[in-house]
Amino acid sequence: MVLCTTFSAVLAHADDPLASGMNADALARDRAAIRQLNQDQLASVQRRDAGYAQGWHDYADTRRQDDNAYPADQLSYRAAQNDYARQRKQYEQAIRDWRADVAACQSGDYGHCDR
Image 1: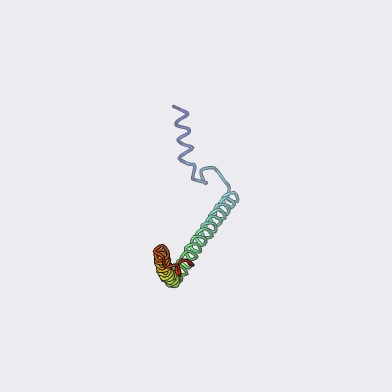
Image 2: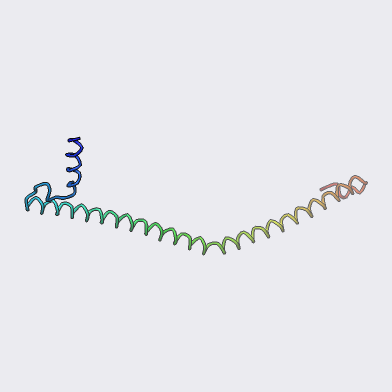
C-alpha cells in the first residue's frame, strides 16, 4: 500500500518541472530543449506534408496528361478498327474469289486452276 501511494505521488508530479526541484538554469535548458524538440517535430511534419502535397500535385498532373492523351488514343484506336474492318473485308473477298476459282477449276474450267 505504501508503494502504491508513493508511486501515485510520483506520477501526479511527473509533468511538473517545478516539482522536481530544478533550478532556474535547469528549467531554462529544459524549456529550450522542449522548444527545440517541438520545432524539429514541426519541421518534420511540414516536410512530410509538403511531400504529400507534391505527390498529390504530381498525381493530378499525370491524370491531366492522361486525360489530354485520351482523345488522341481514341482516334488511333478507331483508325485501327477501321483498318482492321477494311482488311477483313478484303480478306473475305479474296477467300470468296479463291473458292469460286477452286469450284470453277473442279468443274472443268481450267483457266481458274492457276490460282
